[in-house]
Structure formats: structure tokens, C-alpha cells
Image (cartoon, rainbow, N blue to C red; front, side, top):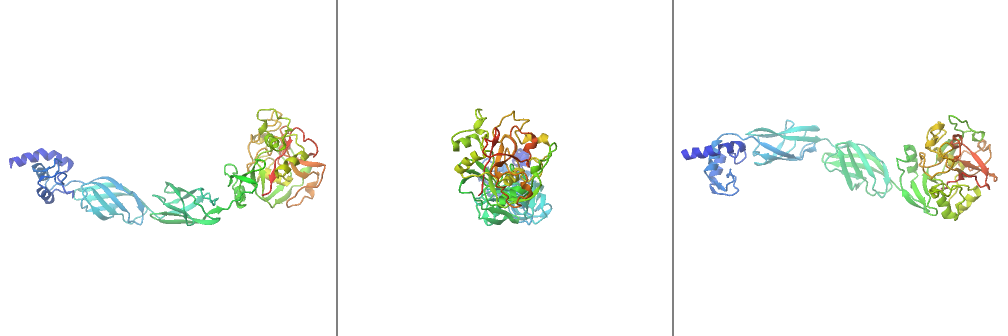
Length: 506
């Protein structure tokens, strides 16, 4: 008996601190633990009864049991996984820890969970059905109750919106989906095709990359363990075409360039590529969609209109067309025509400056060689305005703000500059105001607007004078207004600051 008491005393501190006497992990030291010691007595590496891990089940292990006889060992928890699942319940959750055998209860937010299996170091439960939200998980054994962490119950997903809502048939469009209930690894489908890449940013936002599809409208669906959500007609696959005379630069309008959603949608609705490069000239062009506008007088703060800008009249262009993003440069002209008529041709950046001293007749040779054409006066003003009705295409009537969009008398230093140096208009067209005045195809008469056709006007058949638009680097702000009209003899050299930009019908 004295020996037994000595053994009990020697192991008492270890037994109590580590609760090693609860050999079967049921939270209480009783006959089951004593029976385990007796059944494994002797050399026994790795046995449950070897409480001090010395590969022997002996008096020390027996003493540990007797020292804590009828005592309890509180459960402990190290982890809970998964920590999220459907509010409908049924998620198999594994709780890891110690002294977990035969729990008397496991609850989620106070609601009992079904215990599927338990051991000294783990419990597996099926979560109960409960309202969406986070709740504490509690484990109770004969040794007490302990928190196992938090479990979040999630309702079935919902979809509020998807953006962008259009993309190419080839796939590859990154779509942001807003809603709720997104977690885990959702399956996202566009129509019946599964997205190859899905990233969950939060329970309310995910992104998915569209798979290839066919032209038309499809539903978007998101599937999580909690259920399925659908956004009917949420995405449209576009059959974008590229003209045979061009190569594709960018299929859909860039919202950072074409910032107006109405213009973007009008471009997309054509099913034509937004940005292309002409094969013959390598000139970059953007699509101008068909539409209607009020053509004519737009006075600025400091300047009224000329007589030839009146009356203001409604014009409809029934066909979309491609227009060069920039004025024809000296490099582009020289590549086609073999010589350079420009006055400002000896600067380091001259190849990137617009070609000038080009008469209307001279421009015809470039057009014949490339298959391009000059815009009509109506096409030019429609494209220049890009949906604005103000004096200037940056949406203002203030002459002081024109320097943001135009190289002109007040900021050019009396010379042209490399194209694209000022802000573009809402269609992504540069230098529509200033730098060089631009020839259009129309003949000029001062009273043409009185009888101009309301649909697709092409100008008078006047052969002596041709219209110029946009003003040049030596112009005052009055001449770079969107509605300003100038003219010159078509055989003239065009002066020092007259050039052109090109268009082409798809």
C-alpha cells in the first residue's frame, strides 16, 4: 500500500495538469480507465493506457488513474472545419481537440447538432438547420462545456447584377457578379457553359471569366452548397465583326475612353469591332455609330456663331462608319505618297505631327491609294460632338477651357504638335479641335443649311470651294467650336495648317 501511495504521489501533478488519467477520453476517470490499464499491463509501446509514454503500462499508469479517480477532465478544442455551410443544415463538421469521446451534446447557436462519430481527439457532427448568420459551437462532455469556435450558416445565393453584361463569343470577359451567399468554391455558368475561373471576393461579390459561347443572350447562374441563384438574361455574347480591310485592335469600347454608356451601348449594338487598324495605311480607326443630332450653331461664352452655321437643324446618319482616331500624320502621308508637303517637317517629332499644306485635290491621291475617304461635313460634326450640344466637344461653352482639347493660338506656339497631345472627345477621337484644320468632302455654299437634307446629307455639288472643319494651331477659340465652318479653294495648298483625317464605311 505504501508503494502504491508513493507511485500515486509521484504522478499526481502530471496527471492533474495533463488529465492523462482519462485514458479513454470520455471526460471522467472511472472503471473504464482502470480496466484499460489492467488489460494492457506490461510492455506496451503506443498503448492508450501508457499515460507517461514510457512504453510500459505499469504502476505509474495505475497511480495516475487512482489519483484522479471519479474526477472529470474538461474537453479542449483546437479547430473546427469547415466553418461555413448552408443554413438548411447537414454540413459535416469535424471538431479536433482532446477528451471529446462520447459528448453529451454539441450545439450550434444553442440548437443541437447530430453527433455522427466521436473519439478522444475528434467529433464529427451534422449541423442543424438554422437562420443565416454566425453562431458559437459548444461541446459538452462529462468533463464540462467548451466553445469550439464559430460556424456561419449561409442562405441560398442571390444575384443582384453582373457587369459587364456583354462580351465576345471567344470568352475571356471578366465579369463581376454582385449578390449574396457566395462562399466556398461556387460554380458559375453562362448559359450551360461553366466559367473556367471564379474568384470569391466576399459573400456579396465574386468574379468569373466567361467561357466561349455563341451570339445571343444567356442566363448567369451561381451554385454554392446552399443552393443555386440565376440572373435571367444576365449576359450577351456578341458576334463582333472586323472589316476585311482591317485588323482588330480592340473589340469592345473601352469604358475609360468611351465614358458615356449610351455611346458604348450604341457601338456595341452594331456588332462591329470598336477599334481597328486599316491595312493599307496602318491608320488606327474607331467606330462611330449611326445616330441623330442637332447640327449647326453652338456659340461659346465669348463668340457668337457665323451666319453659315444657321439654321440649327436635325440630322440623322443611318450608317455607322470608322473614323481615324488622329489626323493623318506626316509619316503616314509620306509612306503612301512618297513626299512630304508639310511646313513643320524638320522637328524631331515631325513624323508624328499632322501633315499640312495639303489641298483638297492633293488629299484625293492619298484616298485613292488607300481606299479611304473624307468624312461628309455632317459625319465630321456628329463625330466631333460625340453626343455633346455645347460649343466645344468637352462639354463646355467656356473658351478658357478649350486648351484642354486643342492646340490653338493661345497654347501652340504658332506650330503644329504631335497628334494625340490634347484630351480626346467622348468617342476617343483626338484633335478634332485645333492642330490642323481638316478637309471634309462637301462642297461649300454659305446657305446650305437652309435646304440641307435631314438624312445623310452629303453637301452641295459646288466644285470651287470645299469645307474645312476644326480650326488649326493659329486659330482663336471661335474657330475650334464644334459647329464652326470654314472653306477654301480646293486647288489651293490649304495654307500652313490644313490637313485631314479619314473615314471608311464598314
